[in-house]
Length: 373
Image (cartoon, rainbow, N blue to C red; front, side):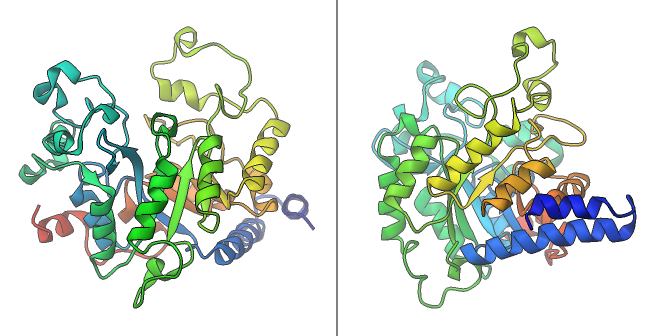
C-alpha cells in the first residue's frame, strides 16, 4: 500500500479524532525514519542554518560554535570561492548586507565575492551589521568578526564534545566552475569522505555526516559525479528555471508589500510538474529534497508552500527525505512536522531541539557568554 493510499484510508476514519492524528503522524514518522536510517542520517534532523544565526551573526564563528554546543545535528553553510581559489562560507553573492565592504572597498561595494581575495575578505567586519539590525541581541564582541573559510567551519565541527555533521550548499555554482571538484578535494583532505575518522562520535560517525545541497540541477549532477556515495539534497524553488509555477502577475505587478509575501502565494503549476522534478532528483543521485515552507506569520523567510502533505508523499514514495527551510517557530514546527517533514533548516536550533524533545542544557545567551562573546 502506498503512503497516499494509507493516508486516504486513515481519513475515512472519524475526522478530527486523536486516533486519526496519531495514525497520520505515526505513518509519516515510520516512513521518514526508515529512509533516514537507510541513508545514515539523523531523524528528525536539526540543521543549524548558517549556524545559530538568530543568536549571532550568520556564518561566523560564534554562530557555528553555539550551534555545535547546543547539540545541532548539522552546521549548514553556503559555499563560495575567493578570487585566489579559497573556499569560504557565505550566503550572499555580494558583501553589502553582512559586511562593511562599502567602507573598506567602496569602489567594489557591489562586486561579487569571487572578485575578492581571501585576505581582502578577511579584512572585512562581518559582525557589526548584526548589532545594528538586532540591537536586542547585540554583543560588543560581534564587531569585527571575520568571514570563515570552509577549513575553519570544519575545525569548529571537529572541536567540541558534540560532533555535528556538515550540510554544504554549492551557492551560485555557475559563478564558480569546478567548485564541486574543489569541495571534494577539501573534504578528502580533511578526512570527511570515506570511512569516519577513528574515534568519531555522533553525527560525525554516521554515513550521512556530510550532506551536499544545491538548487541547481547541473551542480547536483556534478556533485554526484565527484562524490557518488555522499548524500545529496535538491533544494526546491518555483519559477524561472525551477519547478513551473501557475501563471500569474510578476512581483512588480502583484502589489505585494514584499517579495516574501509574493513568493508565499505562488503555487506549482501541476502535480505532474512537481512529481517530474522529484523523479529527476531521485534519478540523479538525490536522497532527499529541501522544499520551502509558507510560515504561519509570514515574514521574509516565508516562501511558496512546497511541503503540502501530497508533496511530501510524492517524495517519500520515491524514497526521498524531506528537509524544509527555513523554519524558526514552534507553531510552524508543530504544523509542518506531521505533514511528513523529516527535519528543518532553522536559525533557532535551540527552539527546534526543544520541539524535538532534545533541549540543550544551556541557552544560546549563556553559551555565547561562556564562549567569550
